[in-house]
Image 1 (cartoon, one colour):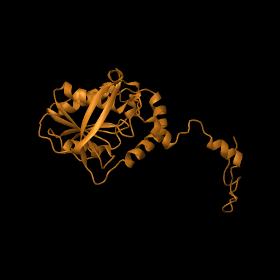
Image 2 (cartoon, one colour):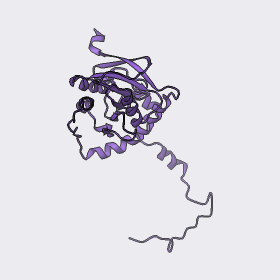
Image 3 (cartoon, helix red, strand yellow):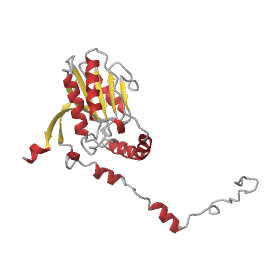
Length: 247
C-alpha cells in the first residue's frame, strides 16, 4: 500500500540503453506463448478438405462480368474476394458454402430469384452489399464476407448505410443466415420483414476478444485476393452432398 510516484521514485532514465532490459531467458519465455498461430496456420485451417464435416461442398465457377438484372423479384448476393477460395470458414465455425446455401434457401422460400456475384475489388462489407444491390433487378442485395459478417443493402442507399447489418459473425448460425435470406426477399417484394433476434450470453465477450486477432488476419488474406481492375463477376454455383460424392 505504498504510493510510488516521481517524488519518491525519480525517473533515472538516461537515454537508450539505460532503461529496463529483458534478459534473453525471460524474452524466450515471453515469445513461447501458448496457442500462438501464424498467418500460414490460419490458411491451412481454412482449407476446405472435407467441407468441415457439414456434408455440403460448394463449387464456384466464374462465368464473366456481372450485368444488371431485370427480374423485379431478384436478390443478388455479393461475396467477398476470398470467399470459397482461400477462406472457407466463418468466425462461428461454419463452412461458407453452408452459410451461402442457407441464405439462398431463405430467399427461395419467399419465392424470389437468387443470383450470386463476386465483388472483386473491395473487401469492405458496405461496398460489397451496395454493389450487389445496384445490379439487382429488385434493387436489394446481400453482402457477405468470408468471416461471416453479413449485410442487407438497397441500391439507393449510401455504402455506409444499409437496411440490416449483422456485424457479429460469431453469433450468426445457420437459422440466422436463412432468416437473412428471407428478410432480403421481403424487402425485394416491398414488405416489412420481421426482426431477426440475436442470441447473446456472457461468454461472447471472451470469444470476441479471442477472435479479434483472427479477424485481422482474415481481412489481410481477403485483401490479397482483391483485383483492382475488376468489379463484379457472375458466378455459377454447384452444391453437392459429400455422401453422394463418396457413392
